Image (cartoon, rainbow over all chains, first blue to last red; front, side):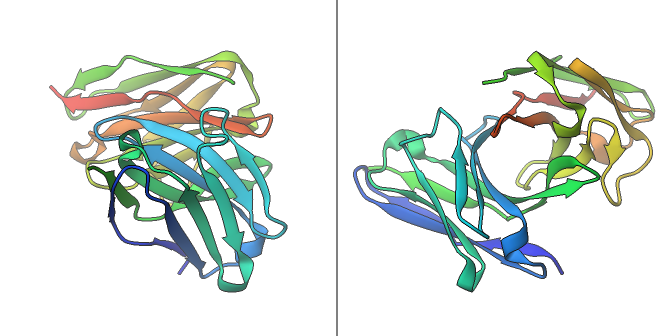
Length: 121
Length: 108
């Protein structure tokens, strides 16, 4: 079964660092882009960025460039999203998703279950 | 960055009715890079439509997508109780992706 399994919920204080993970299984992890999507409480989806684990090519949304770092360790089929200094406004659900290309069309076909990050003093 | 604007914000309909959801882009989007997702409370989004008009695996044929350029539409021909959810369009072009703000489809 193709799946993405994300790390568990986190509660952090402002200023702390954090790295959450997304482990792929059931497919060739290095052959598909993995994207990260933010959903703040009660709000819509926001495209943060995307990484190709095969060569770590990474693209960021201008809104998130410099705010987070996306990385991947292909040896363990895992992608990461990290913060060096969290803010209360980083409180959100974070999803990873696999980008598939079907007859030349791209879309996120497999989603992780989400990781809730709460930042509060 | 391409901005996607969805309308209406909320759509109130009854089971059995037809739903038409709109997604308008601030500049032209390749149809290959326009997708629609459904999200129910407490769940991750689910891919419905890719390439503007192709149904993802397992998606019922009452869901259809159309459009090109800057105007795209998701149509649900006959609403079932399980279709009431939030729907998002998404584009990926020039190495950047964006989502629309979503349309909430609620039971009237």
